[in-house]
Structure formats: C-alpha cells, structure tokens
Amino acid sequence: MNRKLLVAANWKMNGNLALVEQMAQMLNEVTINDNVEVVVSPSFPYLMTLGDKLKSDCIALSAQNVSEHEKGAYTGEISTDMLKECGVKYVILGHSERRSLYKETSTLVAHKVKAVLAAGLMPILCIGESENERASEQTETVLASQLQPVIDEVGIEAFNDIVVAYEPVWAIGTGKTASPEMAQETHQYIRGCIAQQNAEIADKLVILYGGSVNAGNSEELFAQADIDGGLIGGASLKVEEFKTICSTAKGSN
Ligand code: PGA
Image (tube, rainbow, N blue to C red; front, side):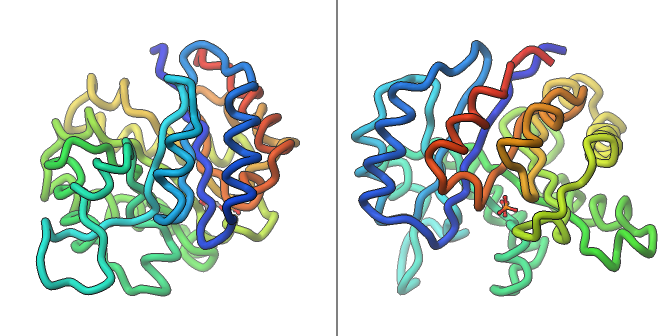
C-alpha cells in the first residue's frame, strides 16, 4: 500500500513569532518529497500568522487541541469552526500530556474526535502506553482500550479521515526512542486492530510514530512498513533539524 507520509511538528507550549518566521522561511524553501505532507502545530495564537506565510500545498496547519463543544459559554476554549477559519486541517487529540496533565479520558477524546470530524477537520489521534504498562506487557491492552472508545463513538468508517499517532509515553521528550523494530511491531498491532473491523480502512490508515524522533533516527523509523511518518516535539523546534527530518520522509512505503 502506497500510503502518504506525514511529518508533523508538535510545538507544544513553545515557540514565538521569530520561530514562526524562521520555520515558514525554511518550509517554503525545503524540497518535500512526493507523497509527503508536512504538518505544523504551533500554539493557537500563531496559527493564522504561520498559515499566511506558508506557500506550499504540501504543508498543512494543525491545532494541538480543541473543544468538544460547538460554541457557547466555555471560557478559554477554542471551537472547531474557529480553527477552520484559521486555515487548520488537522487537530492533535488525546496527546499523553492532555491525558495525564489535564485528565482527558478516552471518552472525552472520543467526543473531541467526533466534533473534529463533524467540522470536516482531521484528528491526529494519539495513543500510547506508559513505561510500567510496557514492562508489565499491557501495551496491546492499553492501545486497544484507547482506540475502542473512538471506534464506538464515530464508527470504523470514520478512520478513513483519522490519522493515528503511536506515542509511547516513556519515549516522549526523554530521548528514549522506541527501536524501529519495536515501533514497527506496535504499529502492526494497531493496524491489525483496525483491520479486524475493516481491512481496507486499516490498509489506508496513516499511523505516525512519536517519541524522541530526531534527525538521526527519523529515516530508519519512517522506512518501517507500518510507520507512515512522525509526530515530532522537541526536534521540531529546531529549524535545521526539522528540515533534515522533513527530507528523510520518502513517501514510498
Ligand atoms: P518529543 O515529543 O519528540 O519531544 O519526544 C513528541 C510528542 O509529544 O508529540
């Protein structure tokens, strides 16, 4: 299956207007291989500014979160319609930092996935096990338990418009990357979970790896059969490093 590869930057609560400027300049100059899309997720205040500066069709904007509600008295929240007006295409949902620090449950994540799809945006649905869960061989159970509420909420057909990001919690921001073999094995399991319900959708599903991806390991990770790109935190804040990561995505799995 010739799936598209996605290289997605997750800036988290980092960056400023200077980084927006430098990153846009680099992205407007870098050669992005065929069948590759680069996605940048700055914090909300920078979305429109960055969007206005980007010139290529193979670069898209993503938000890092959204409200599950359409509109109303939810002080401090951002709606899917607002993101659409800012030119956003993707929304990162279920990131482990949202799950652990902001107590977002898989049920809430599923509601957000539904809201994002209803607005015609694409969720980047993050799932992943903790260090203890991997050590006690619960990885597959945890991943299935994070996927199932979403399948129950939106149905398997909706996975035509969902990107999944496998992010082992122990690898996020720690420098401890999953080995390409370990990541591949887990991605294969995730694709298998979807295949049990619809093989065709599973075959087309883009599954990103996230967790300490950098310019030194991205090429090998992205070359794995079931790894369709990455969700990149720390290394996506460094313009030159992110440029190298973008060019290691070959788009021909
Ligand atoms: P990291 O973060 O690349 O800094 O490990 C990845 C993520 O949290 O999406």
